[in-house]
Image 1 (cartoon, each protein chain N blue to C red):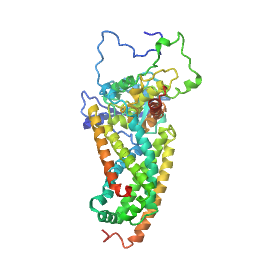
Image 2 (image 1 turned 180 degrees about the vertical axis):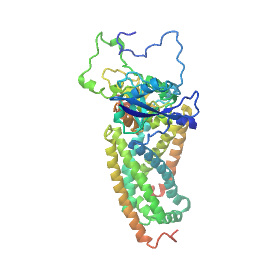
Image 3 (image 1 turned 90 degrees about the vertical axis):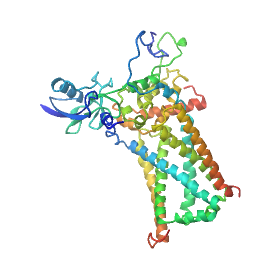
Image 4 (image 1 turned 90 degrees about the horizontal axis):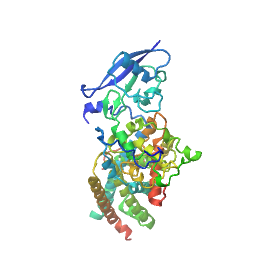
Length: 240
Length: 147
Length: 139
């Protein structure tokens, strides 16, 4: 039987005047992920602890938190991987707080929606069958398609901190995911939404997003590609 | 709904008769709509950066590395007397003013000025300031340009 | 943002670890310093047209003071840092070295340090040759 000490940042804007850290000791056998630790605390010690989770397999992006000073997904962070000592769990920095470890992701998803995250096609001419894509063209999607919209990059970006209307790395990475897709036929539909002073040009290649991503993706690479694509299309009239 | 889930050209329609959900968001799509463009500033910053790297290297190396010592009106004038350095200095003047003021604009917009009107006002003000500085700089260099 | 809000939203929690973040911040500060210098520089050079050669010459004599030579070194550092980090950013704009941006940063800074060393050598030998008697009585 082992024990892990959790130090959790607590704050309920409805009743508290200042945040505080609560400490809980969680006994466990074998392995313990941070998310399992939070479940145990919620069930056995403090039912008022709030946090988001869903899939427990690092594919839904709900449980992104700031654990021991790094952006991590609680479900894929094993306590044994962390350095010895307390497990410090905080909400993602710089995002409006709903309660405890739950951040307000309203803006995050509004920005995601703004870049039109779907394949834009000329439907009148679509065949009555699937749209083929070569393995080579598919490989271009390998990186951006793995984004699970957890919000870590968005929370880590200094350009987001300074400006509530900047789209942020996650939405722009998604714009890249669709723009680079060989099946996408967007010409001017999506371009002005990312070729925008509050879109790609607000990115100053600070690279915090690359450090933060728990899936080890590279939003900077996608944003840089979008800047190049905007120049190619506006200056040289390339469609894609 | 379209049978091809990947094929729609517009967002899935909201269920009829429902109000939009109450929002706590501060992001305003209209602010983004009014911020379209920006490629020219971005591209200009890159082009002038290259001009500055090449030009400034020439400017500094010649002024201080080979001639480090006491500078005076006359020995600056000697250097400026060659048309090569007049061309370098004028292009440096233009590139540095654009690069500097466009950079300052970027810093300001990172933190302030949400509305389109205020951004346009800032852009116009900086163009006026930049042009005036360029003309003033040309005037300062004129005795050597005219030579 | 009120202090309570700032604490609640966990502002500033340990985001200052990434190298890219510091590179950007110093890049920005150096840029602001250089904009101020640009206008000062234009002002000084143009003084010759306002009140004759003697104004510019006396300003230039003042700039020979070791203190100003040392300030020049700060300026050289601002230029070198901004220029070489700018090269790194230009490379990233062409899609080069995004994954290895830290290594690119180290190489760029090595070049900047060599450049600064070169100018420092020049500056200190200049101070030694012209102001061997120390800093006093020169202005």
